[in-house]
Structures are given as C-alpha cells and as structure tokens.
Amino acid sequence: MLATPTQGALAKNKGRIVLGYYVPYDTTSWMSLEAHADALDYVALQVVSPDACGNIATKDDVMLLEFAHSRDVGVLPSIFTSNRWLNHSVLADETTSSYLAQELTNYVVEEGYDGLDVDLENIEPTDRAALTAFIARLSGLLHGRGKLLSMAVPAKPSDVTTGWAGAYDYAALAPHVDLFTIMTYSYTTSSSPPGSTSPLPWVDRVLDFATSQIPPHKVLEGVPFWGYDWNTTAGGPARALRYPQSSALAARYGAKITTDPSSKSAKFTYVAKAGDEPVPEEKLPPLNHVVKSRTPPPCSLKPPPVTPKPTESPKPTPTPAPLQNHVVWLEDVASVEARLGLAEQHGAGGIGAWRLGQEDPRVWPLLQVWGR
Image (tube, rainbow, N blue to C red; front, side, top):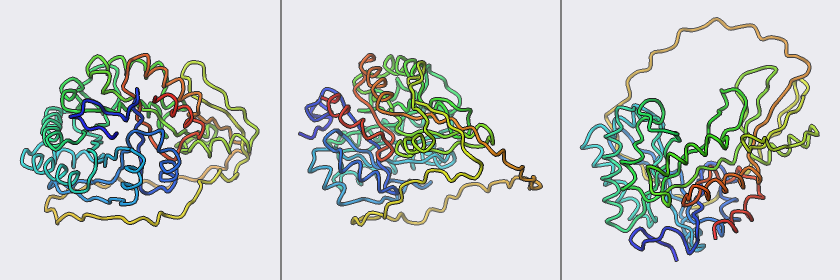
C-alpha cells in the first residue's frame, strides 16, 4: 500500500495525508508514533545534518524504520539546519550543492527510506535561486530512484523576497517537490508578546497564497501541537509547554481552558505565587533502540569567527512581586479541528504536525477519521 511518486498517489488509500514530525531526542515522540501509527501516512525524522563540504551525519533508528514499515507508514529522514552561513555554503557553491544532493540520494536508497524531507531554515534571501536549483537537482535524483521529496517551508501570505521567508520561491519549487509542509505556526514565539502561535485568519491567508502557487494536493497545512506560558508580571521569555503540561497547569490553578473566538486557539490565565515550581516535563528514559550512525569526514571549511558582544555590567535582580500573572496559549483538539476545516476549505492535501509527543491525545481519533 505504501506509495511512491511514480505510482501517482502519495497516501495509503486515504483522502488526506497526515505527516508527523519526529525527534530522536525525546522519548515521547516514539511513544506517540508507536501508539498512533494507524493515523499517520508519513513520519519525518530529524536525523540528518550536513556540513559545509556537503557531507552528512546521520543517526538511523533501525527499529523505528522496521516498525513504521510494518504499519504502512512512510519514513522520510529530514535534513535540518538553521545556520545561515552553513546554508549558504552548501547552496551557493554548485560543486558542493551537487555533491550534497548525490550524498542524500545515496543515503536514502542505501538505508531503505521512502524519500527525504528538506528543512533548511534561515537561508539568505539572496540564495533564493540557489535553493531552487538545489531542490530541482535533488528532486531529479530522488525521483529517478522512485523516492519522495517533501519540504518544510516558512509561511508567508505573499511572495516576499526578504526576511526569513524570502528565499523560498513557492512557484519555482512546486514542480520539483511532492509535498510541502507550510509552517503555519510560530506566528508568536517565546520572545514575542502573548498570543496564538497559529492564528486562524493568518493561516487562512497563508494557505490562500500557497495554494495559488503550489498545486493544492501538494500542500500540507502545518499544525502545531505545543503552547507557551507567558509570565506577564515578571516579563521575559515564555516557557514552551506540551499539551499535557498545559492541561496539568490549568488543573493546578483551577483555570478554565477556553477557545479564543478569533484565532481559534485555546488559552487560559492563572495567578501563581512567586517561587511556585512550574509543572515539570515528563522525563522518560532514552530509547534502547539500535541506531546506525554516519560520521562525515573532516571538513576544512569553518564558519567565520563570531564577534563577542560587549560585556554588560550585571543588573540587580529585582524582588519578584508576590503574585505573578500568567497567560497560556495552547493548541487542543478543538483548535486542531478548526485547522483541519481550513485545510479542507483550501483543498490542501493534508497536514504536517510539529511535533509527535507534544499533542493533546484527543487529536488522534479526530485525525484517524479525518484522513480517510
């Protein structure tokens, strides 16, 4: 049942695709995959890192690949960087770019993966054409071996050519990529004022643009599973929370979780005493899986030295207010359902969820039905 691009279908007899992103450093990602594989078509594994010479380092979980294939889930290792200098090094030099594309293709074929996911972030806008050329080259190699190419791209409601999303030419990339996860999240971050990380009106605009540039069946709406807790009294960066932490926090302080009518995200507020311990993350032992590692040869190219920031005199720590006001924004089953409706409205091919292990467990029965 597992499909390849040449078979003209990308999902296992399903109307919509559900792709889940997996990280090897968090055991809850494995637990989520193991429990809910029947609701997934693809899992993208953040396990590939390039260097500036085009070599790759990988960590391949043998048990995960065997398990996913036994459940008819396609497995896509994901090459990830967010280093601008590194991205420029591998994209702008044609020899390095060609070598990296061939290395990735050989790796996917040798390890028996179903394709590759590309998640290159923080690319210089001036490397826009170089990125498109790399993806075209990589696509030709992978498709020539019957493998998929998926790509995670920043969200944008118009074709901006500057800033974080400037390097991604949706229309030029579209012929070469089988599935695009449009990262319709991180609208707010830990360092921004409180608010939804994926407000529905913004997601609507982004999908409207994406589906005008990319065939809609290739578009996967990015769906976030996490939230943030802002201390609005003390200020400072917000604390990232999985859904179970958010739910436990609301229960601790007797707060009611409600749906914001505009963003369709969930939220609640609470007041904590100064010094209250936060709800801890669930600490699970690391997996005892067989992992094959690839170590690249030494690369002579090194990033330029970083100019150290001037040393600032330490500031006195203010006495905290006895009561601290907090606001939490999160994504629950109701907010995910609203986003599924938006994917349907735009004719999107499915969703890409970041990430497995952070979710409201109630989303799985919903996704199981929605994907069919």
